[in-house]
Amino acid sequence: MTHDHSDTDLDVLFPGYDLIVALRQAFLKHLLYDDYRRRSPELGGTHPWTLVELSCLVSGEVVSGIVVSADPVPGGWDLTQCFDIYTGEDLYTGAFRSIDPMRYAVRQIGTVPGRDAVSARSAVVPLLNLVAVATADWSAQPDTVARTVSPCGEASTQDFPEAFVCIHDGDDERYGLVTKGFPDGHGGWNLELPTEVFVSTGDIISVAPGEDTWIELIHDVEPDGLVRRG
Image (cartoon, rainbow, N blue to C red):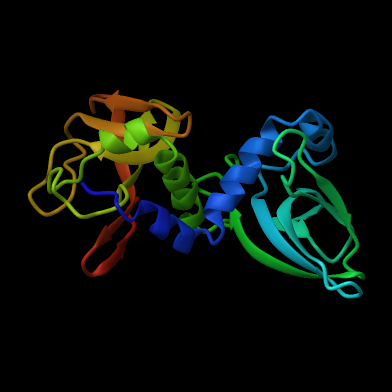
């Protein structure tokens, strides 16, 4: 598998991805992080990391940053009311700005979904959002990327794992991306055989289907389009 275009592809999936990740990492280490999380507990959990660009209607000043405090709305933030951003201008202390949308023109550049944004069975959040969260987490771990193969072998040109699955273990369910397994001879994985899956904890787990354990294919990409099963 080759990954030479992963950053480019992620930026297409999540506009502003690299900057969002850089600002998020700096914000997580900031001394005021806990204060902002108390004000907006949904941040990075059920609600996304959101990159915005702001243009002052009076001075013409342009500034960008991630939203760290705002009124939550389904799937995002209310940017028509006052909100705070983190600009990361100072590498050591960072910079926070309170934004009044009456004084600034607000443009949302892009988002990266929060880790707890969904239940895979949710009728509210599109399936693509689940896959996007898993793909972003997978791509942030170089060691995991390096050990991932496709059903066609390591020479495959696919940039991301394409099979998103649900692991059923008794009454428990876990979701993730297939990173290694046995090909089914038709360009996919044989999910009745031992399979490695990248899960939401950031780990790769080995799954051996058996009596109470089975793997359900939730999403895959095939030549004729999207396949959803189960």
